[in-house]
Image 1 (cartoon, rainbow, N blue to C red):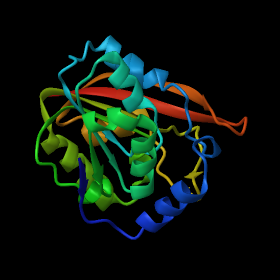
Image 2 (image 1 turned 60 degrees about the vertical axis):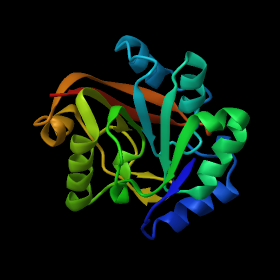
Image 3 (image 1 turned 180 degrees about the vertical axis):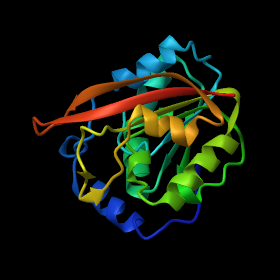
Length: 210
């Protein structure tokens, strides 16, 4: 199932990226998203949990979760091309995923989620209004005791990605934004090796809804 909702002008940028670049020609490529997989294992996320991956693009997280036995999966991306690429890769397994074509800021969920996963999407929000909208969205879209897992460029990471400005984050910044509604589980930094033999420093934080 594919749900289409309103998008902003930046959609054109991402449609172009996913129309012209192979999956291993973008800096965020990972054959196996082990850091995200570890989050699901360490927090003993039930196989029936309702999970949404924000800005999933060409990520292999959904593939991994299907292999692990998860049955209630959603994937949101602003790019229709990205959605079509992952659907093609998954083949018949795509029937087990709900796909949403939307800018996350325009997303109006029709359900609550047990896990909100976002690796390398949140940091593309650069205005206070966008960041506040995102905070309100996740606060209202996650079940009580549900989980929020975020990965962004750290303060030692790049200032741009795919030619776009990003917002760098620290543990303190995450606490300031999400601390009112979420209890922090842990934060850590990690180097990501790109397909171009460069290193990008990420910060990952996991939270539980209060």
